[in-house]
Image 1 (cartoon, helix red, strand yellow):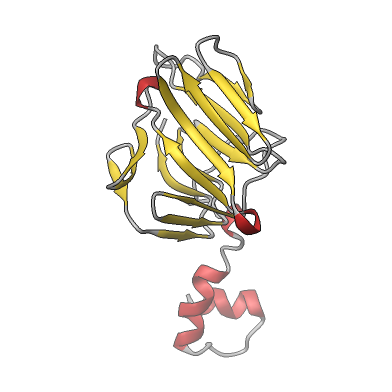
Image 2: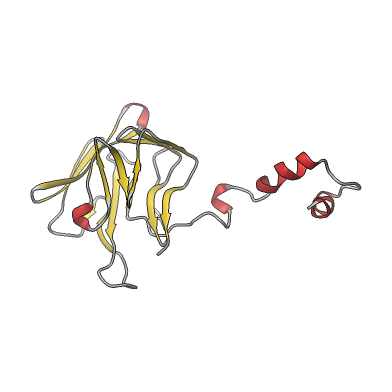
Length: 184
């Protein structure tokens, strides 16, 4: 390690040990450029909220709660009305994900997206799937979330926010692009 640092930084003698410990992770660069961080495919129009809340959890500079094989099934982006993208897993392995809502436009006749100034509600007959609004200072607040009927283990209740078998309670996530990334 010392030899690598000497050549990389043009040093004539070995750097102090603490220098090697600090420089290692910093040299890997920006979070979005780290090769060990999961990546995802995002719609070009998607601009994440800088801060959002769901069932006592706070997310700052987080783009997606969940990705599966680089695909984010739920995205809520900035706009005068929050902008929703929702897709469900394929029924057959290797098939593409099925888009249900793209930028607040439902592609499924069983889904109704009611958009109002600063809020929206996504429903299917007999059930509310998702409700969100823009609160004070532009913070997105997710009020209702239950996508289990859509084939996604993603819902919120009094116990917390449930994602693919994990429960988030009174958590704070900051500067991570994805909270839970699963392989495809």
